[in-house]
Length: 156
Length: 156
DNA sequence: AGACGATATGTTATAATATATCAACCCGCA
DNA sequence: TGCGGGTTGATATATTATAACATATCGTCT
Image (tube, rainbow over the protein chains, first blue to last red):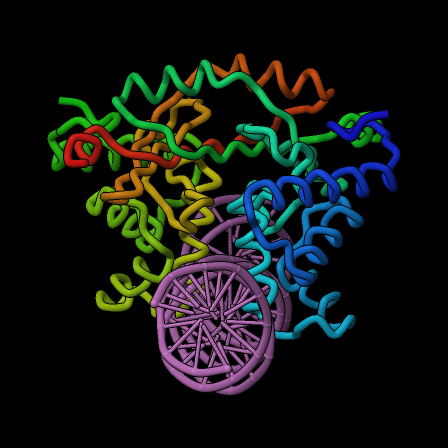
């Protein structure tokens, strides 16, 4: 069982281990994984899908953890800027990172049918060559692919 | 002189030829390049930068071409879905296509210092391999790179 | 202990981006 | 002439995100 791509996986385990990894990383880097931040990450891990900020906020609000937009945007900022979650620009949505802690340039595979988003990775060779050709210094990449996941491909 | 990347180019010519190319393409495909659509494309070409929908709308409004959001979003939809312009997801902004008509999977190089956006391209080999590995069918790609353009690199 | 700085939270308000909906119009064509 | 597709006009509203400022918490320096 693994948690990469569209394959099945042991979800309870994947949530627990991801949280543990993030806790360790925060301790090591002296980052404060405060209750709200932790809960937002947990929600993203549990739901295991790309969620809008306001979807998350609704859950927080129901739990009494804050009801105003800045609450969730601050938590998301923290998670995203430390690599514990990602923003899917194409969807204006947020997703827990599948490989927290690892240094990576993620590729997101977005299924237009079931709206599942999988995090994959790829070598940067093609991209780096293109950037070098233009004399451009890469600092950050957004690579998102829309299409059909294996399950929806078969269904179609 | 060419219009690719961050190099200098003959801007007047680049606007004219791009417009002409789009006009030809529309004629060939029986697409209606109506005054508003044409003007929006022209604005994007003239400004030669990624513009927000409301920036464009302000110009249209000043010219009496419509003052409500749907006006510009409809025109942008037309241009984007026919490949005459692109949306830069990371910026929520729109950019005239540098290679209208050509079949391409663009890569956008976004300079965080001067906010210039260049359209480049790259082979899809790495990406296709990553998608194939996950059994994913690619329909559309968003590849956006943030960093520093050659000029801002030197300045820094 | 007291003062401070850095970080995080609470709260109100508003900005920025985008779409739904429905009526009217235009134009080619059966 | 009337129908149908595509386009436009206009109003309203949805969705996403940030500014600004007050308050609180916590470690640390003196």
